[in-house]
Length: 447
Image 1: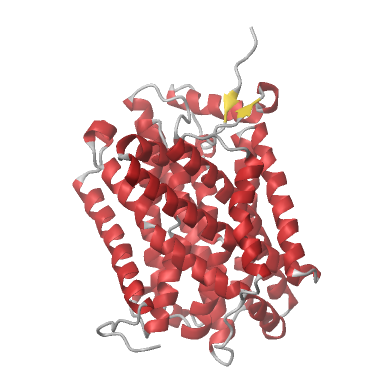
Image 2 (image 1 turned 180 degrees about the vertical axis):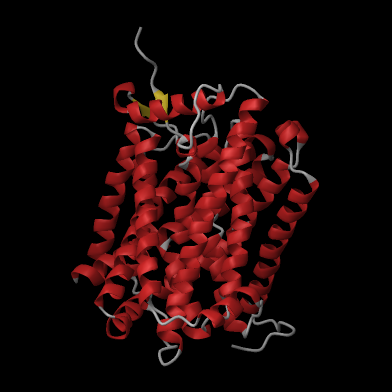
């Protein structure tokens, strides 16, 4: 009898002969769940979903907002990065738990649990977020290629699109190859920023105060702070993580779910802690290099050109390599998430090339009409922050329900923390909207 075709989380079928590594990984997870496998290497079998999701926390939108934060305000907005990362850890863990416990992803549950007008509105907002995500990712990768090779920005976007599509085709060989490629790019970004911190003249005492002392200096700092949150806690990452964990390991009972959740939570903490350190390193590098004497630096190309005389070609080169790796890998993950969102909300299976075109066209339009690339990056992160309540509120609602989660429904402490995180984002969004419409914000000086 022929072996049945397996499916990726996005619903594409995989030929058995091309997914040996993924099959071995699944079998290894099954052996751990059945008590047949021991040893320290077990954790690696469960590593993948949170690493994939973590690239969303190091995408080019982070570069743009973090450079602006560090250059203009020094170390003073580091606490925003830390707070956003802690919120991200909690909600990514909830997303992973939802997929493990229910066997469904967040978009599928939204379709099943909400009335049609509500779920269509949620899908529309999520699609806007996907377009904003792709805008940031394409522009970031293209800017990096343009600065590295001297090619026009538009040509860099075309190359980024081709490379992204080629990497997406790896998923036909099973989920494990994709996890390895994205994990390698995550490691590359982390290594590049370790080099940056080694070269930059960091005022560590000031950085420590910035991490532990919450303050918003003025109205422009508020816009950047909300942009940081939009660039850190990503809507598509919340949808994606639940899809990457659904069905993983062939769960049979609650005992299996408990083991999977234990490993999943560990991976979330490790992967997102590393992503948070990269974001913190971005702000620290910008503060150390630009704040005194170059606080006007607000664009990625400015940052690169200014880094070369200030910190040398090695620092500038590491910056570009990390930007290109970020743009390409986050674009890949964004496309996977977009497929999952559309398929989950609408039940439509969309060809990969159609999905890729649907979200990257706005990026080409933005550049075609002459919008400043870095400004577009920052504004895209604000759009993401405004879209963020959709998956956050849905996660809070679903993971507290015992009829869906059974014994794994949120405990009181988890639910309070989730509500506090969602409330923080909603309040910041409300303040941002008030600022956008010119309404006075008590206690906040004009920027």
